[in-house]
Image (cartoon, rainbow, N blue to C red; front, side):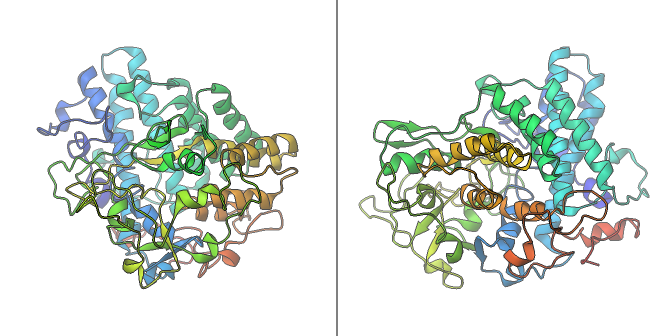
Length: 531
């Protein structure tokens, strides 16, 4: 831990920026940490550091997708080490996830230590503290579902003596802190922000994240309570088709994964920070003072297009077995031959490509999707979600400006349906489940079952880095009931039966990076199966 945390003092992250608006700070100079946290203006600037960890390479910038796409039964990875999950505790992508999680935790801890002492507007102070608490809760949630019992850090570790070593934090203690942080964040955060501050953590985001946490814990009553509170806010809604053409149904869904608004005839479907967005990573194409070959470290965008895009390395393609699961409705309102989410999520060989700015060559040329870059693992389908339109700015495909949607309202509704089903409330389970299908124009289902939930989540949230987490939580692995680390008769899924190469008792969690174990002198223990 010490080797990582020492990399992230505030002077490193304060002005790197994290959003298109409220975090879009011109990087003219660095300020010494000792001179920060003295005024309201500095407190507002400092809060940006709390959002830094979810960007860039380590979390939603590319590392989580790179690793969890390889694990998922939805996708095929061209890197056979990742496809076989034969990496170890020295792996760079896994180390990057760990680093960025703790980069975010350290920034939140510093904010929570310093801001209470600043003389400033008390309402604003309370909100900034709420933002830091929400972000720390988010980071610790991912720390536990990815790394099981890594160190639980609640102080400014830069103040610790150099010889300080850290051990594993128990899941019970992690969960206590996550619940406490998110509950306090709910009390402090506003429901909405002015346009200049869109992208900050909100009350709804904190409620949704707490509901999601309880769902992963199989605490259905608590999950339903907080997810219902999000619904009751009345400020979120699904992006619904405004017409009955194929394009309307496709774009009403696709707009949630693209950096620009989409249209179907006269109907416009807003993209980033739309009414379906509960919380998303705010990206832009500012390269900062770094070059395009290392974005996500100094730039403000992601690496999604660079790794997976049609003009990038295309490391991943959809698995044919998954792509061919989409329903073919007998009578869709638009007449489309397949669930429109298929066409919003997957490229077919020969599909016409749209570009973010201008075609890269002669505008008269019609560019088609091709499998030429995927000769190793091509199964007839290409990855489209988050990769439409093709990003082709001068730095293309680097510093991808497309926001990553961490929590969509669709997920709130589906989780609420799942909690309701678990609690025996069939009416609510059917109602909220079918709201998702109605947006896609798919026929209603009644008396839904756990298999309906599993299938619908598979389709609705494909390629959003939720599939593996869903399968593992359905196995009961995230529930801390003593002796319930493995799948049991009451659990919904056995990941080893679904995910190729998955080893039960090992792959529920990633290995804690070896150098962090080494620097902590053996006090920090490795996860089961990775010793």
